[in-house]
Image (cartoon, rainbow, N blue to C red; front, side, top):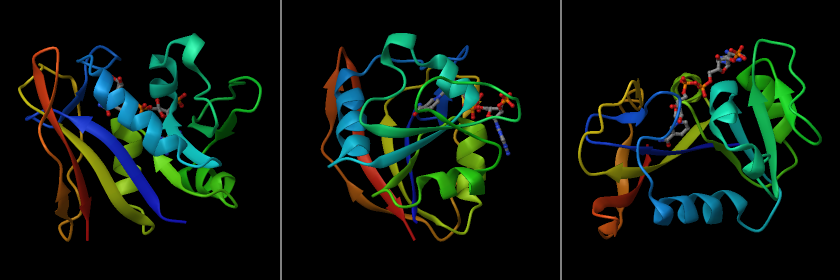
Amino acid sequence: MKLELVVAADEERGIGKGGDLPWKLPGDMAFFRRLTTGDGDNAVIMGRKTWDSIPPRFRPLKKRRNIVLTRQDIDFGDGVISASSLDEALAAAEGGHRCFVIGGAEIYRLALAHPHVGVVHLTEVEGAFGCDTFLPAFPACFACVERGDRQEDDGTGYRFTRWAS
Ligand SMILES: NC(=O)c1ccc[n+]([C@@H]2O[C@H](COP(=O)([O-])OP(=O)(O)OC[C@H]3O[C@@H](n4cnc5c(N)ncnc54)[C@H](OP(=O)(O)O)[C@@H]3O)[C@@H](O)[C@H]2O)c1
């Protein structure tokens, strides 16, 4: 199964601040929901800290196989799969339709070094938000293959782009 990363990053490749997202972009949230839900039975793989950052009323993410990477023995609740390695997470996604890696930085780093990395859906956010967590570099063979029109939410501009080898 191909790994598809979904991430929003600012002009400094910042993705997070204080354990949360540094911006509020409803248009990007809607894009994320549409893409990762698709026609059903897609998996979303995330790190435990990203799981923690999702408000309890929104998790597990609906209509998707939620797979959380942790080295601890944690029960994330009904229907949520806990995995102790990216390969174990991938195995749990098998049989489904698409497999999305949704962060954070530690898990993006693992995915970008994995032989099954296929594509990155990157929302390029304009500006610099003083982040403390950053998107690791893409493989050298990756290039931007699609670049959408400029969007704007509440004065913050952004674009949907797609990167692949
Ligand atoms: N802008 C975006 O698109 C976006 C998307 C997602 C997240 N974020 C932001 O990114 C930040 C969180 O990222 P982060 O890098 O700090 O944390 P993270 O990647 O979400 O989670 C890290 C945790 O994953 C587990 N883990 C890491 N490597 C593992 C491995 N090889 N095997 C098993 N488990 C492993 C560990 O959990 P345990 O400690 O439980 O062992 C580790 O503490 C937050 O600010 C969040 O809001 C931004």
